[in-house]
Length: 309
Image (cartoon, rainbow, N blue to C red):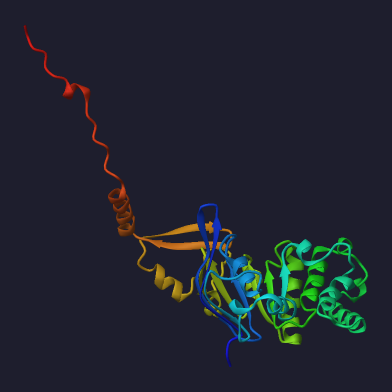
């Protein structure tokens, strides 16, 4: 079976004044239909740029991008608008981007259906089914301001599924929620994935949220990294004394290090092997790259000797 999503050497660059900012650097990525994949990384890593490309909200600078057999680079005008309306659903961290504040939960869910030309009777019926699926049928006539943050995101998920898309893109959907509400939203996504046969790509900086996916990939500085899910049961855990038993694949990378650098980053803790050779080489490189000091011509060397009369 062909993958639902195929990205080949996808590059995205933005022009900022006279400078070029590269958000994605040759992304190679595939997703199977029905799969749920999490991408973790710090702010500015390129996560949102990747979602915007897959959602048809932006176009890549270079590379190939295919979703369900459609080359997104070839979609224009009505075809592109139809793709965004019917085949992909979005859930954003910012609720103001998900819901219209002056419309009830029910009318928010029916809006995408109205744009797709669904009849009024069908719109109401399908919207209530979706609100029931997210556990909010009793809040159908409430506006977003009357709902909690977790409830607002549940309505946002119902809106994203209004036109039965094949792909759901979630950009930090739990970023503004407390831990309990975040867990409920992620569990709901899993339930809806099974119920509606969804393919879900979720980007986050929360490792606990990411762990619910079938695969967890890292994205840093515009490049996809390792599959974090491959460690499976080897995932390290901290004991009561604060010691961590690392997986064998990690220990083998650290074995020859004279010491290990530890960095606290937004997405977690980074262990980086370092050796004395690396340190000395690095200093040598710095010295070699440094320009030679300017030649100084001292005035007393340039003075001509006085002639005795």
